[in-house]
Length: 303
Image 1 (tube, rainbow, N blue to C red):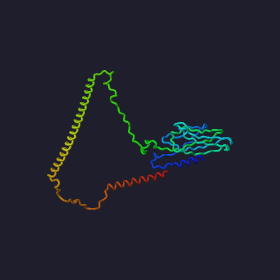
Image 2 (image 1 turned 135 degrees about the horizontal axis):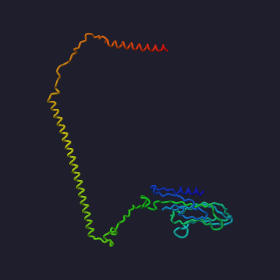
Image 3 (image 1 turned 90 degrees about the vertical axis):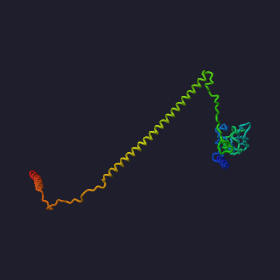
Image 4 (image 1 turned 45 degrees about the horizontal axis):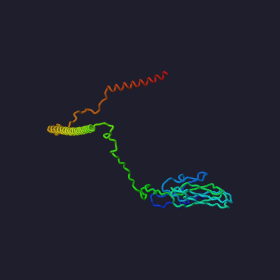
């Protein structure tokens, strides 16, 4: 029953704002504030520790333990954190005739009271009897823009300006003002000027050396380019002179004397006879082949 009542209250107080999600007020509820049999609790351990949190409802339930004929009073309460008395106190009177074990469920609206006002809570029983199975839950609303600096979209937001620490140069250590250091101030100034002069001279020499190297490299690059150009012109002139010499000899217009050359060898007979040496060579090979074949047969017969 207590859980259903709690869910109903949360749905009733759902937000309907048009701000961005980062600054929309949101709602929630705590767990059971009672964690032991003492029936007492500290609010900082129950509610979230965020700014802009307002308590809206106190929802509680418990069962009464008493004799039927007894008169018992139960208080569910929270002390006022910033003063005396109570910021919340609900009274339940259990008249004679009420049965032991009866459960009570209540949801008490308290408006929107800032969480900073809520002190320690407790359940107190006056008269014979006691309570058990107690539950105390708080519903709340959190407004992030409670602190305007929470989000740039909050009303009243001020763009933060960083604090720039100003250094007092006069307060820094100065060896010239140190009474424990014995120095000739004129000598120190002269030495500093000499060091500056040496540095300036060194800087001038380095700049002149860099300029000299640059001019030398520039001159060398120009001379290399000129030499390559002259060499190319020389080769081109030589080629042109050779072409003129060849053309003056008339090599391209010379012609070979004569025309076609006819065949002067005439064969008397188109049929050439076989050579005798070739015949003798062929006959000898034939005889050798025949002897080899006959020798194979002779060997077979001997076996």
